[in-house]
Image 1 (cartoon, rainbow, N blue to C red):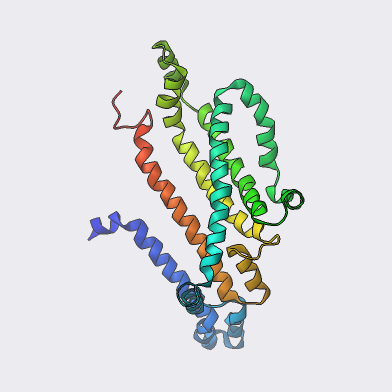
Image 2 (cartoon, rainbow, N blue to C red):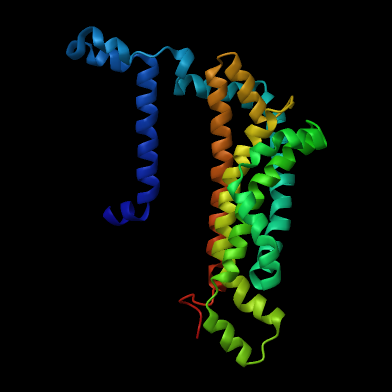
Length: 278
């Protein structure tokens, strides 16, 4: 029994905490806690009673989710648009940020040339560029994809640059002593050692991409999860707001889990992996 618990401890404790939070939330929205503590607190217990319009309830959110996903299917068109924005924006950031960061980390000249821009972008909130982006490309799909691109490029670029800089110099010296070519040096030592940093940058990028969905779609979008949340909030449809928020959370968690599985598979590439012979 204990061995089974330890094997699934993360899942058990995580599930238990989620259930406790849902129970507390349902009790808050349904007035359970006000009724429970009324003998103890008297009229003060009424402060524990929250109007459903402000917080909704897990039951109402689940019902609304069922309606949006299974009955009307309205949310799917929003999901398709937001997913396409992330695919284009985040995918472009990966395709540009990883090679550029690795090159800057490997080349002293490239590092000196790109480091001021990396530092400036990291210190500047990318949402400040939104008015300019709207002026440049309008308020359509390109605007939303571009803001996601800018938000996700910075962590990917910085982590890729740092990944090369932290490679053990002893490994590089040994490889050079055996007349290892630059390409061989990169593929056999630098890239495997950089994998944890690259995946950490991608995980940070996922979080920023989810922010980009909401922020980017506030500017003139008629479709997407972000604008669905915004419109629902304007009409006090808190159950719809929670459905949209939980959808974004679930997408972020799913993408993060995919990266975690990828990291497990490529872990053996690292030069200091215990299972690799010396």
